Every structure is written in structure tokens, then in C-alpha cells.
Length: 229
Image (tube, rainbow, N blue to C red):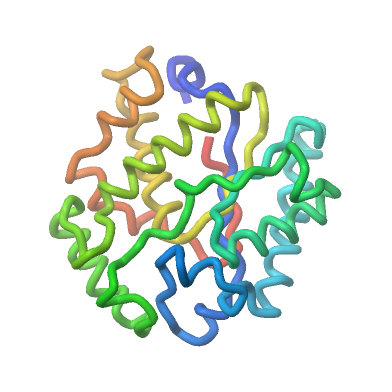
């Protein structure tokens, strides 16, 4: 991780996929904001336990790196399963979810897979990912392409970078958005040609098919915590 890479971000970031949700448990795709915010689709009881363990792991990491809780920010998707996860983690850290250290970021929401996939079986994910591998700029019918999600994740990151400085930010989001975020950040980190450029320029340079089509290699399990940067 070179100094040029360090200089293009003002904060350090961790990512957390939501805990096992009721849609995970029942095998449903719930990707629209309208459905995603419903309490019916929050965490399953196993997922609450997973989120608590993830919060404890995050707290351990903070302590090992001598990071004070006052420097922590939690940014999360508005979906009920991510809000529920963020709430559990915040309670482990003893940070109020309604307080100034926690923020709903709309652009961290789940990827919308389109009405032909909404509330259908999880088995249909393989169709979407096959499409992504072929052309990450191609939208599932009525849904978002990988490139579409990458664009709004750039906006989310720019927002966090503009609002926080010198903070440790935990991003609580969903499988596809977090895979895509890791893909573009990893490519920006490795692209020496863009060293010294601003955040948006560096990440915009990663929005190419050969990069975006690889997002499945960064897949996360439910409640998996990773250091992003």
C-alpha cells in the first residue's frame, strides 16, 4: 500500500455485510428499496447473533489499533437488514444509532436486480452473475448493472470523505454492493498510473468491463467483516 494510495483517502474503512436476514433464511431476493425497508425482511435470530459477533470483532480491531470510539463512524444502507445489523454493532460499541456518529447513506443500499427477480428465489442470482461476467454494463431488466452500482458507491465514498476526516468508518451494506466496492477500490489501489489524482478520478478509472466483471471474487458471507482500506 504505497503513500500515493494512502493520500487519496482521508479515512480508513471497514466493510460489513449484514447478518443472516429473513430473506436469506427463506431464500428470497429482496432488492427494491420499497420492500427492503420493511421489518418483515430484517435480521433472522441467527443474524442478530452474527452481527453481535461482528461488532465484537470490530471492537477488538479498534482496540488493537488504539483507535478511540470517538473516531468511529458507522454508515449503513437504509434497508431493514442493514439497519438492524448497524444497530446491533452500535450497541456493542455503545454508540447510539440515532447519534452523530451513525449515518444512513442511501447510496449504500442493495443493488436492485429488477422486477423480474424481485421476491423470486435466490437460485436466480446465478443468472445475474452470469450476465455480470459477460457485460457488467448490461442491466438486468429494469435493474442496476454492476457499473450503475459502482457509480453510486463512488458517490457514497465521496460523501463520507467530505464529511469525515481521520475517522475509522464501518460501512454496513449488502453482498453485491460490497463486492463491487472492493473491486473498484482494489483496482484504484493497484493502478499506479492514477497516483496523486483525486478520489473520483482514481475510482472512475476503474469503471471498465475487465475490472467490474470480476466482482464475484470479493464475495462476503453474511456478517463478514473485512478491512477495506
